[in-house]
Image (cartoon, rainbow, N blue to C red; front, side):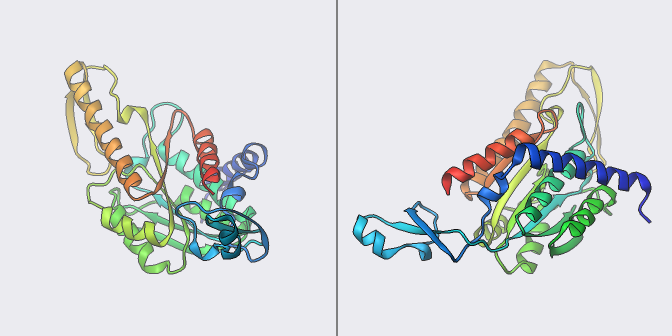
Amino acid sequence: MIHNEVLSAVKRIEIKTSKIIDSIMGGEYHAVFKGNGMEFADVRKYFEGDDIRLIDWNVTARAGEPFIKRNIEERELIVILMVDVSASGDFGTKKQFKSEMIAELTALLAFSAIKNNDRVGLLLFSDKIEKYIPPKKGKKSILALIREIVYFKPTSGKTDIAQALAHINKIQKKKAVIFCISDFFCERNFEKLLSVTAKRHDFIAVSVDDPRETELANVGLLQIYDAESGERVLVDTGSKRFREFYKTRQLSKKENLAKLFFSKKIDNISLSTVSGYIEPLIKFFHNREKRR
């Protein structure tokens, strides 16, 4: 039985994200994720990456350069929310835990999707597939998804993104919009499986971190606990050399991750528990709309 505090938490998230959608987000999601219509509207110039099946050959012949058809009738999309529920999400030093931000962001994307008449599914993963809910439509199904994110207790604290990608590649045959929301703390290489997923689907990586995961405060001797491995290490944060070494290593990991997404032509939304998710998300939608 779901406790009253969980229901209250779900309601708070619903109210907060609904306000954001109504007052700030507006039609941002709708403008970007339109689906493939059938009713002809007009034409525009062809850009690299556009579906060549939409090329209007008559206009192309007259103009001397490729143009594609734009349509206005919309078809529902399939949206899959891949959410990392590993133990590293239970970390936050100022405004909120990463897991709390992830829950709000997931709700925001889910409510935006149903307002667009899309079907939304949920995949919760650690180093195993914790739970999968097939794509469905309607507010009732979205509230059920949010309850899962708030209430769910993973059976493992570790992370294996490769396994989550392999599962999606296996079960999701139709093209989908996939938001993978994680801190991407994963020891296992997932590049090959990511390539497969990115080719089949519209894959969007949403990385969530906390500033203290990159830059240690000077607090003297500190026992660092790895929530995923359970390892405890005593370090001297009073050492400037150690703090710089730690920061350089963490920034290198971030840079390598960004390079990986760029090489696969994958959109990456980088979020911090300090600055929030609204502005980065709006920036992502604006940049994506420009490329349409």
